[in-house]
Image (cartoon, rainbow, N blue to C red):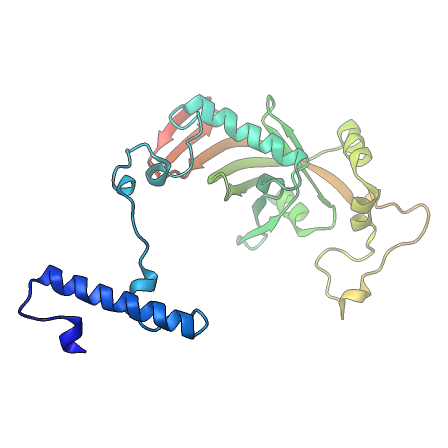
Length: 259
């Protein structure tokens, strides 16, 4: 086989040509006789994908180098802020949107941070207020009574956009409370009809008890919470270069940050 595969006294290009010719002949024979199983081709040939000349002629702006097409707000500070608010508004309406279920962190009585997921229920862009609902008996209510300042985190993996918000929490009452309750669906109200407090220890999941009385619809345990947005930190991950910015709504300032 050594004499057939290559002759060391011939030019290297001739040896390679002879080897490829032999391997190709052997591959075709084995393929026909062994139900498409390849034995005779070079060891690594099956893993090699031919490259076209155009693969070496990409321009710097091609998608292969820059990733997904950039958003128009990429280098625009004010537009980045507006885009962030538009994503928050979409998060209220679109249950499939990543911003529909943000995380919110508060400080417990012991001084340790606690974090949980909430459902975004409202977004007032002009007033810089978000809204979510919770149970009056939950731990976060006691925590916001002690310290109303919290942090909210949103991340959309598809868009590669993260928002970190510094907020001040406020429990709503009066007309705002009534409007929020009327907007809830029956299936959502069932969460507030549970007799035990959220986080109570039970022997098994079937021990959750509901109050079946006609007068108990969960309203007594329901509370809408307003999150007054004090600051918004924007992070946009892009192959061409990340963009990070801080929008301080209390002091009416906006600045680019090092990503």
